[in-house]
Length: 537
Ligand code: NA7
Image 1 (cartoon, protein in one colour):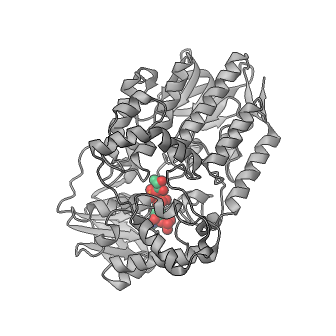
Image 2: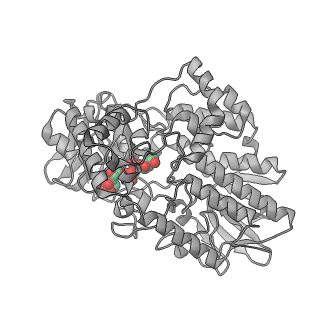
Image 3: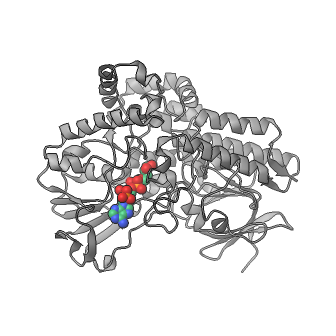
């Protein structure tokens, strides 16, 4: 093995966060490189090529805010832009700021070891190449480690089968084919609605239904885009002021209205774009069971009105959690898909999967003949991408060991015992719980300022203090426990039936639910206080 390539900073991951992070570091004049496991940039938007993949955030609140030039020239064509366009956007950003030359693709980091004497990280890639860097910024993405179920005979299936995250780059023939989709989370709901009228037969294997409400997408004309450009300062200020990082603002006073008034408000929100029904709704729905139940009943009636077969409609209505208490999928004609003759809902709670066969899926009720199987079965969310790198800190302990029962961080950026490792969109930040790019800009800016602060003062080592880390974990738990979704089975609470230690009942405090403004106030205060809680030496 030759000498390691030495840099001031290694950034891991060339997704939405990594792209902005390298821009900031290069602007500071630091010698930084991005190591990306995939063979091109884009992260989530490079990988998830399944039909129907698109933003649930208004496009113009998702784009970067840091460059007026970029804001002035980019035209978002749809209110909720689709994956191909989003990938074009990220490539455009990289080209505009000439960032590709700082990126190395096909560079999967497998091991990272902290060298206490030198105060550097040593990184080893899958191809054996080595790097050394004073600072590492992990921008690994909260949903970049897909997980598969483990059913008997899965390998025997002779047709095409893939996870939505690994949807092939070449076109997949769907016309005339019998397709099975396993999973009805945000991804399954997007793909099912999109392909229902393209395939010969569609079987939806549903273990648990999810609440879902209309996306209400539409085109953005040249004139509208011009208005949006004029309003960008206001848009980003609105996002910064709202807990979810959107323009939607919650209202309060659920019980001050009559039931009729509430229904009138919900009729309006149900017809409004994006997450309005969730985050422009009464804040009480997240805290008050009776308020949440009334809203859930309203949405259930909406589902009943959209699905022709009453038996199918009831199967699509969740009973184990209230509306908005897991990550809410947004849909376009999802419920209407079940009114089509070629679409069948296979309720796995009635007829569980027994095994896969060479020609399909055998449940306790029937054998379903399939040509294609799509796994929309989700991710080892937020911590999965960290767990699969062998990260060894000060005393040789791995990060995966430290986080076995759940992550522990200081403001989601640092974790004690792993100095000079900064996380952007990491566990216990607001990246997973709010409008992602708004939160990553906060994260990247804060990390960049901290690196600059350390570099200017000649600090070689930056580590969270133990008490400070405990205080942050307590704050994360407090914010989480106030909310009704505290026990719900979704990736927000670290649930994943396919990952050991993440099963039901083992809550992992993976995200900070105190809201974006409160998070930003906290981290700004820490910086203003000379990076309180961080040991700089
Ligand atoms: P999710 O939301 O985690 O959904 C995964 C779905 O897959 C969910 O319906 C699961 O049912 C189902 N699943 C998982 N394992 C199995 C097995 N073994 N058998 C049957 N069904 C299974 O992932 P998504 O990709 O939809 O969404 C992730 C995020 O990506 C989304 O929130 C957006 O932010 C973007 P379960 O509920 O566990 O019964």
